[in-house]
Image (cartoon, rainbow over all chains, first blue to last red; front, side, top):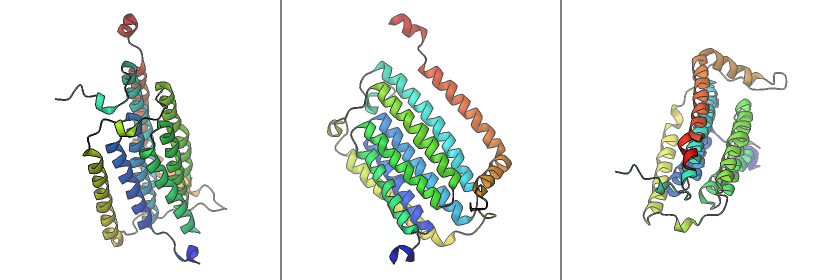
Length: 106
Length: 180
């Protein structure tokens, strides 16, 4: 039976994480809603977490899993601050688009 | 069986990620992100990172996505936006897809090329068993409160700064009140 014959190796996990990262990157580039762009950044962070965990098992090193914990904490702080900024911007204007926030453009 | 779990979780992850990018309604995008986060948690379990899988579900799916949904509802943007009329040039979208495919190709090439250079380096992972169900948590705790205790303390500073900063950002200023 093929389901038991093949076991996924670390390379499979890494390739999957690369795919997730690429999708998140394309999302940041093609969407203009700041909330969706934030979600795509979370997708990229998750891809990195998956890479950390896959390599922690491959190298038998617990430090990879500790690093994922710190990434989670930083991601939580980042989301809190980012959403606070978005809310305070949206109070002043109605249109939700990253292209409208161009006052600092040279 | 492992292959079956991997394929199912991979489909969850990729379908959820594509949902985040392609769905027009921000609420649907947030729910698609939950699918991706659960898929990643399944991957963590299959790689013997039980504690991180639990934290992933609680912190990401439980807290962060709820925060996203809360802000979506607060701002009242929970309606489908027309993706075609978004102010994008005709060039940017195909260019972004090409760039994404290029990044993917580079990463996959690097992974496949470097496959044989991975060498066993750590002191070994304790896998959770029936007799010792908390082996993984114990090992992470020893690493976090031993080698990385300074970084751990600094994360508390980071969280305090983030919370205070958000309160300052979201607070109504006196000039706003006077104007309204």
